[in-house]
Amino acid sequence: IEAASHWVALALLSLIGGNMIWEALQKEKCYVLDIFPQQVPAGNPNFLAVENFLLKGKTLQRYAERVGVILFKLLCYEEADILLVDAGDDDWFKPYSQVNLADIPLERLATLVKSVITRDSGAIDVIFRPSQTLMSIEGAFQTNVYTADPVILRRIALLCQAEGIFFRACA
Image 1 (cartoon, helix red, strand yellow):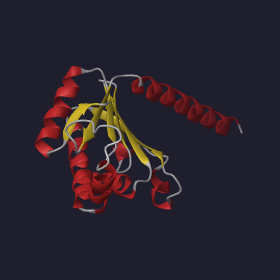
Image 2: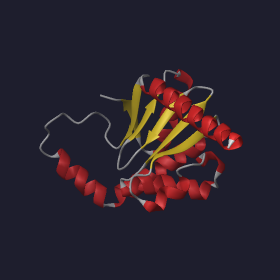
Image 3: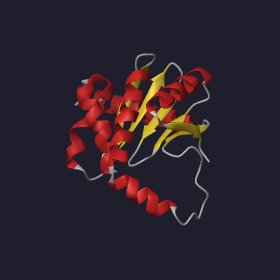
C-alpha cells in the first residue's frame, strides 16, 4: 500500500503541476494558426457557409497535415511535452491519454494530430521547453499558441508562411 500511495501522490502532484503550468501559459498572449489572414468580422453572413464548405473538403485535411509539419519542425528546435488533454468519448484516443506523446513514433503522432483536427474530437497540448510556449491543437481549424517569447514567435511565423497557413494574434 505504501508503494502504491507514493505513485498516487506523484501522479496527483504531476497533474496539479501540469495544470498550473497550462493555466499560466494560457494567460500569455494568444496567436492562431488560421486559414484566414484576419479575424472574420462577427456576424458575417457568409462565414458559416464558407467554413462548413471548407470543413467538408480537402482544406481541413491539408490544414491538419500542415499543422503536423509545423509541429515536427518546431521539435527540431525545442524539446516538448506533448499531451492528449481531452480524449472526449472517442475510444480511438484512449490508449494515448496517459502518455507523453513526444515518446511515440512520429508517424503515430502525425496520425493523432490529423485525427484530432479532422474528427473535431480531443485536443493535444504541446508545451515547448525552455521557452514555455503552449501550442494547443483542437478540432477543425483551432490551433492556438500562447507565448511571450519573440524567438519562437518568429520561428512559428516563418514555418506557417512556408506551409501556407496564416499566423496572427488572436482577436
